[in-house]
Image (cartoon, rainbow, N blue to C red):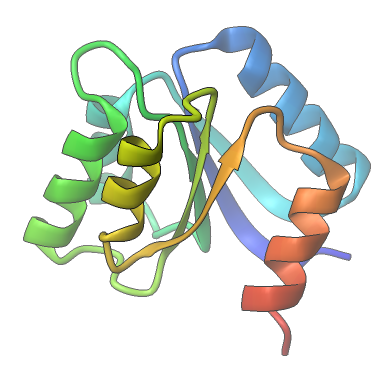
Length: 128
C-alpha cells in the first residue's frame, strides 16, 4: 500500500500511539512513523526534520493541545502541504467545528485509528 512517506502521530496516550503505529505497520501504509507526546514536541520535530505527509492529531494533551498546535502550524507557515486528521475521543460538535476551520484539517475522526480510516484517508487525499 504505502501511500504515506511519513506519518506523525501526535497524542499523549502511549497505548493509542502504539495501536496506531501497529495498524500502520500491519497495513504497510507508511515508510516512516514518528510519535510526539504533545503539540510542542510535534512542532520541534517539524522544525528540525522533513515534513510528514499526514498528521493524526489528538485535541486534549498537556503543554500544547491540538488546537494550539494547529494555530502555530498555520501561523508559522511550515509544512504547507501536510494534511491533518483529527484523531480524538472528543465527540463535541464545537471541537469538530473548530478543527475543521483550520485549512490543513481534512477529517475529524474518533479514536482508534483503523484500517478503514487509513484506507479512506489514503484513497481520498493520497491517490496518485
